[in-house]
Image (cartoon, rainbow over all chains, first blue to last red; front, top):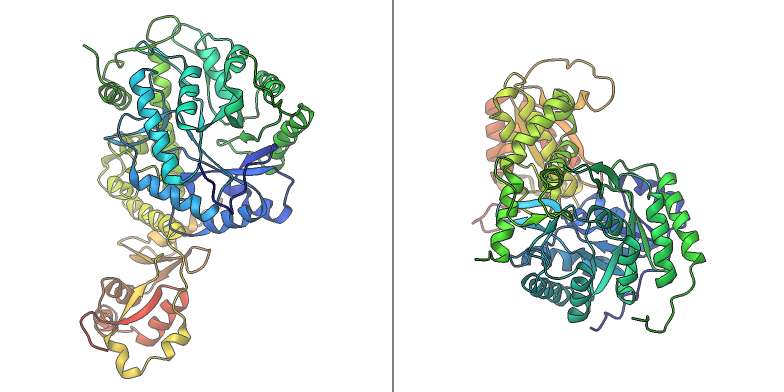
Length: 293
Length: 260
């Protein structure tokens, strides 16, 4: 797919932060050393006002990642053309270095459900997701990244492994993948999988960005450990170690710290990015040879 | 018989939205059995994200009734009102109407009007940007033509009229310390964002009637007559200059159908 000539190729292989309204003024006054900022696309779909003013100022200073949370790529129903148009307007206006969305669904006849809901992995759902990613990339005129989900339940009808599903979408559509390492930990614990084995099997050469976040912990109906993708705390130590393992396979990649609830002061958030940056610097450059099977 | 993808997603959504329905068919765990507590995580996520969105959009409404009452009211609203689109900034445009008809809130008669101010505030915040009409542009209009002109409101301009001092109540609940509202009377509130700051002004009765008529598309002369009818002290010049200075208008234009 051809890229627009004035669009920078990629996000830097550094730590980035979610851009929060409570930090706008600090960021513009202090211009902290942050690799990039990421925003939820839907928060910038208003007609005008301060959100756009601040985003323009931040995007002038830093690389930008546009992360959608409402396209509902994993829905059985067709994608919302109006939403695709809004996304295209944002992409045209801000020319982000990356656009990503989720392997999840959120839109239904009753309205927008405002959560990232899980889908079974079957030949039918794979075909639908491939169509939706193709359509999105055509509308936006660029390659997108698709993020692995965190899930709390499984579907008995699933016939395809999650990694195989994501790999098939990537190879059929040419899209990249966003590897959320916290989501891997959450889903692995919730479904009794080995998180390291998940990372080892993931098509790492397709990964264009990593996400890190903090999970919450509870128990399910049988008393088993249940992790919740909460985005309300620092990255947990076991996720930091899984990230280190990921980097040993992938080399440094753009890495976002997600902290969306109970957002701390900027210094606390920035400390998380500094820690991730140190790990990215220590990681060996990505090997150019194809990974052994 | 197997369900289609759309059927199974419909069943999942129905169970998500109606806790009295059984768990959707086909969900399971690594143990091989469905777990209601795991499905409840999704139910809770939907309710929590929607009630949180309302709490963020209606902070004064929440302060007036307290977080527990507010959350209950928001949950009741969210049960039957899902966002129309992924633009959560618009979620709750009709929350004030719901509050007005919510029996447990009936004793706080002004609550719905305060919520209407908060809807108007966030609509003004996200409205299209545009240069407001300036007073100097007013001065350039020939005096004999002015009565026949209509205005184009600024995209951010909103007028909330209340039988209660809703603007004063909103205003005194901005900080930690709440001082009592001075005079208990009806208020009309202009909400407008000419630049990057949302401004809120309580308008005199005549100015409010004048603006309400202009927002309906009336000519300046006709709007002034209506304002005089409700307020004998209405001053056309100071009202027009005052509202223009606040940034309420984008342009003047000849009335539709009139040849200029």
